[in-house]
View 1 (cartoon, rainbow, N blue to C red):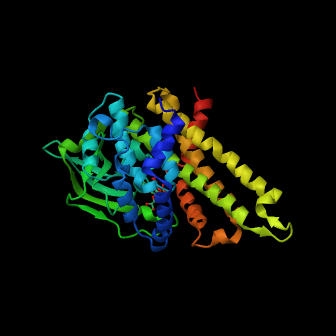
View 2: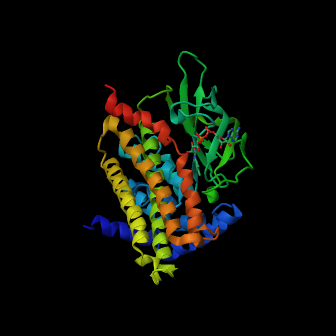
View 3: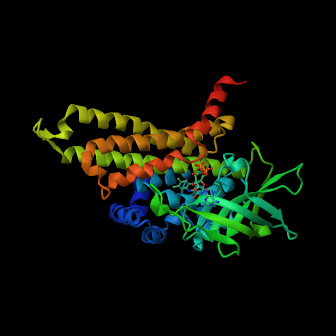
Length: 385
Ligand SMILES: Cc1cc2nc3c(=O)[nH]c(=O)nc-3n(C[C@H](O)[C@H](O)[C@H](O)COP(=O)(O)OP(=O)(O)OC[C@H]3O[C@@H](n4cnc5c(N)ncnc54)[C@H](O)[C@@H]3O)c2cc1C
């Protein structure tokens, strides 16, 4: 039997060989500078089958586990946008693994080339998945129309299927959140022309305006009351979201540290007559950042493997998942800052990869729940009965 480390190495070689990573890094600088979508990268990744990673073997895919995809996403680094497609397919796999095959159609669609995106975030909706400002109006055929604004829809130039939710207040005493998929060619969908942000620019996560957009009845996946209501779909979304987003930032952290180390070796100190790689203070800075980073992939891996093994952490799951993602994004920002101090001023140049990674890492401040939003949950787990 192949051991796990060998398996991860084989998958890395198959899906993300070194020469591909080199090309992606070169193009990342161009996409960032020109503020444009990563079309060529996506085409290469799609050709390698990267968009089918989660499709189970009995549906014609490689059937990777969440842990395996997490490792690949960490290797890719700053793979925030493709993450959204992987997450949607990962949700379908997580549900199938737990006996719910209602989303199996996603596998066939992914194999047929459809691209899935995630349309959950809305302006000032800090309930995120537990409520929605988008109005869902029931239709006679069992479908809905959605009216509202979804912010930060990554993959906006190319997605063809959008998982979205809205609130049906037809019965004010019994409101319902409606989850399902929208198809790109449905009338009423407009993508904002505004996207000029600090980091993660290639993700082109533009706002999506929905004006009475039809969600066909067969695309409606769930009707759930608002609030904290346990449900397999929202659990699968939360798990895949937190762990795969965490993987992206773990990848940013690791790459930043590599660049920091290269920076120390490349710079010489006139005072010490050696490279900064031999200056104790510089080594200590890199060592501390490395030490801090190393717990991040371990934490992600522990969560991913428990999730793959169908372990039931019950009420502890949200704590574990959110902690893994928050720690990863914190590590990414700290590693990027430490690495910048290692490269010195050259890393500050907009053409330097680290300059982009530093800006990309800041996007980690905004994914839900933010550290502030999560704090009550961590306190309550210890303090409240
Ligand atoms: C790089 C990146 C990629 C992301 N990708 C996704 C994704 O694919 N899917 C997803 O669901 N979430 C995505 N998110 C959203 C993210 O996870 C958070 O939910 C979001 O950043 C919440 O930010 P906030 O709480 O600061 O927004 P809020 O303070 O609640 O809202 C403010 C934001 O909404 C925008 N906004 C407000 N009104 C409008 C309007 N009428 N029209 C357009 N925009 C308006 C503002 O410009 C501002 O950016 C992404 C975030 C980032 C940073």
